[in-house]
Image 1 (cartoon, one colour):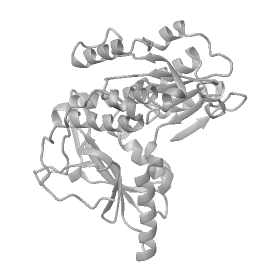
Image 2 (tube, rainbow, N blue to C red):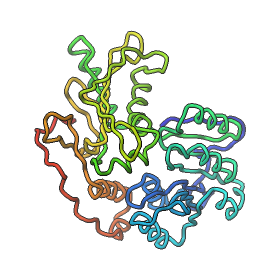
Image 3 (cartoon, rainbow, N blue to C red):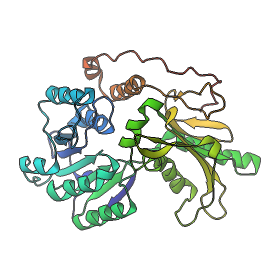
Image 4 (cartoon, rainbow, N blue to C red):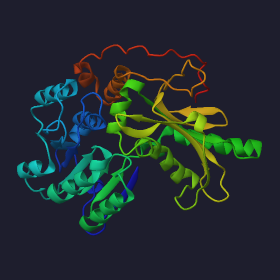
Length: 371
């Protein structure tokens, strides 16, 4: 994670006794999204289960789309209405302004935090609402933090002015597979006498017919929505800077730019660059249709997230490796993740998950070496 902390006398979350008998961290969710799928919903479910349920109180859920007049009737909207009906103890509202009218001021000894999981272009106004209207002094932002550098600067300035702790969720930077890959790369260089080749990998599980929705939901594009994770790893561990990189080369044969729903974006992108003067080049392979995983390839040995990661290849060998993994499997993976966080009794109370559907395209190549 990447954090920025305001100065002064503001009290950070880590300084608060958040046990049930002591002071409580109040949490506001801005952007719930589609139940069983969206990241905001995932964070909310985490917070409603132990051990987090005993450490914080959810005092409001701001859902700017499904509770607005712009919401299109359909299955997703019905799922959200059912979720709201099943959680009558939670306060669902369409805006920060509406929630501010219902919430009292933050009590002495408490900290009010916001978890913002809206669409990237909506992050800045959501942050402003959290800080200025709701009194939040700790904010978690989904990557990439904002739609533009100017918006990030506005967020940073507002955080400094109001003494707000801000964390951007680049969880890859602290992932086990990254640490293992970096350790292996160091060993490899010591053994071979030369630096190994390194490629950063990221796959999502969508198919062509889902691209209209993916392109719309993931504006301003693949590099903000997906590649930001790998770029953050390159910044944190390979010395990448905006001013210092060179030798950017795009693998056009393995990249695909397309138009879906009137939006031009990348379905997949493969490129390499030298992150800093004197550094070895590193590669990037980002694909919306490659499965559900992220990882690092070091001299052909892949260190991947997931146990096991979901990897597939396209039977048309003339195309780059990719496949669509349908929503049922993606949701099942989230259910497994959430179940692992819950105690046995809570897990037993969860509705049974539907069996994972079979992949739409069968693997046609042996699985790569996975570590």
